[in-house]
Length: 375
Image 1 (cartoon, one colour):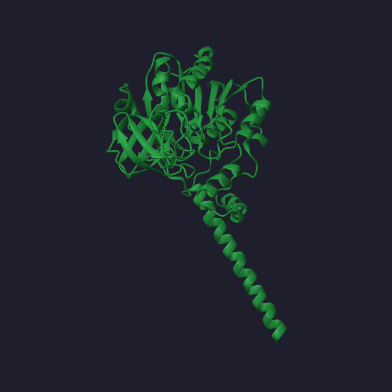
Image 2 (cartoon, rainbow, N blue to C red; image 1 turned 30 degrees about the vertical axis):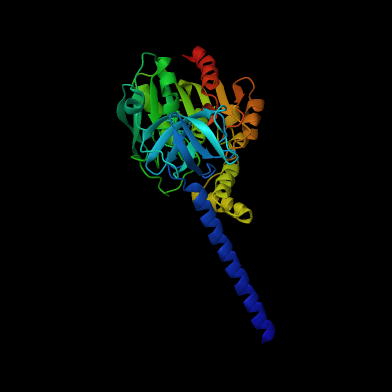
């Protein structure tokens, strides 16, 4: 009986180990796919406020706090905006002093735990920027989708779509610039966002199902006077724009795409999200398989589908080598595959979806040159 008993024990152990691996993989997949909107991404490391003074804030020194540019600073009940590192300020070995532009909400105090975020405005177009706007409801396949509509004279509309971990407040960074070009803007909230319908499985699909909400926004824009639309997406919002450009029944109304940090290979992004949330490396392949099983995500990235072939409009891509969630190499591949249509603007020292933050003036000038012939 001993060999039989030993075999049974071994089988039981294997089954137990297999079940544990499946459960661990499912957990890891959930960790990556359940990224709440409006929460800092896991790659955005926590910092401590060491001191504040007129027009400046002292933070823990790290690669994150030394990033160039302009960022939101968010913590419990506080939102502020910081500018560049102040070279003339006294810099200790373990801290860094940045310019404090403003405090929008709460009080920034020593000891606070904060994170840098690409989102520099809090509120809506009226409260944050003083722009006239309307809250509109867009009929979508899962229910009504809320959006902010900022009117302007031109007949070409810009539809903005945020990405992972963000909300429709993120595109406010560019709203004043777009309004200055007299372009109407429709800033969309899609499935899973506050006020929008929940995804049927409660998970994000990295743009593969969410793009249909963007398609609904295109239909809304055309019904309300848009002759052409420019799709402007960050992260998974950029993926949604590419899907819509390939598959929308109104794809002929799309005159251009602006893609910031596009998610072009969902497996790489899923692995990056899971790893940033502390999932061990050994579980990352299981996380990818679990996510595919849970969501039905295709096993191939956008570059290995018909999307590059069906791309038919001028496309501006902002991306850089420091993006750990949506690798820059895929944007380079897209630009190489369609040099006739795709312009890649490389941004150094910028994390995911923060290409504008690293250098707003240069970003906006590049964007102006791209948009001018499309208006």
